[in-house]
Image 1 (tube, rainbow, N blue to C red):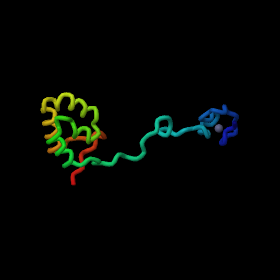
Image 2 (image 1 turned 135 degrees about the vertical axis):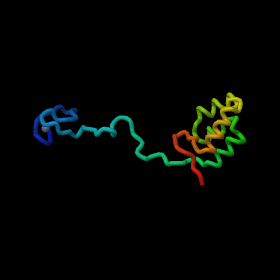
Image 3 (image 1 turned 45 degrees about the horizontal axis):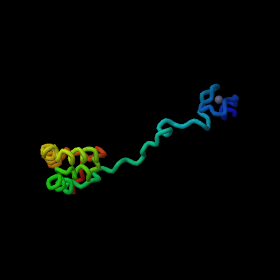
Image 4 (image 1 turned 30 degrees about the vertical axis):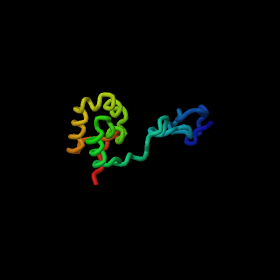
Length: 112
Ligand SMILES: [Zn+2]
């Protein structure tokens, strides 16, 4: 094929013209190549604060509040250890109350 800018003959699969440096039709802008980047930001506060608090308080030793907030791996670990004999659950409960508990997406919990 030929460069659309300078007319120099270039390789059919070239992504950039060797003559003038202008991108060809094969050129893919950075960030748009290979891995598909999520262009829609994760909504903040997907999970309800009060629901998480109640789940942690009543079912925290089974890791239910972690499953609810999409922290599945932590939830399984808490289920197997019964919330780290309740210590882990207590720490999570305090984190939820003071507002430093993060969901599986790294977002804060949504308070009404
Ligand atoms: Zn060119």
